[in-house]
Amino acid sequence: MSGYLTTHVLDTARGCPAKGLRIELFRLQGEARTHLKTLTTNDDGRTDEQILPEAEFETGVYELVFHAGNYLTASGTPAEDPRFLDVVPLRFGMSEASHYHVPLLLSPFGYSTYRGS
Image (cartoon, rainbow, N blue to C red):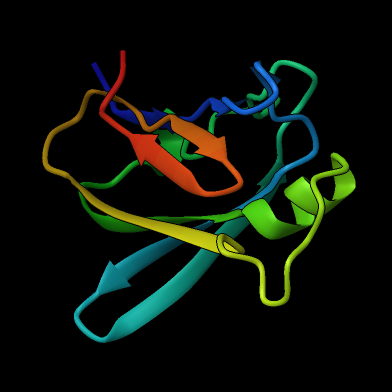
């Protein structure tokens, strides 16, 4: 089995998938941080394609950057200045070729993540 990467973003304050949230993927190698792609979540809070498909999968250290502030503003959440959560970076390692699912549970004042299935 080859590896691949997916995500799912849920707006826990509103109780719904986070539609229209921009996500960037970076690969980290030492001090180098390489942008691999930018995707946006769909109606279900998922991306229409795998973030990192099997053909592009490599073990290593990665970072998903969730642009939460823009999403929260677009969803009607009143913005304080500065917004408590704006950009949410999640840095994680993938050590074997398997399915890595990195969901984000998001609210205006907190978030959590875990390795899902």
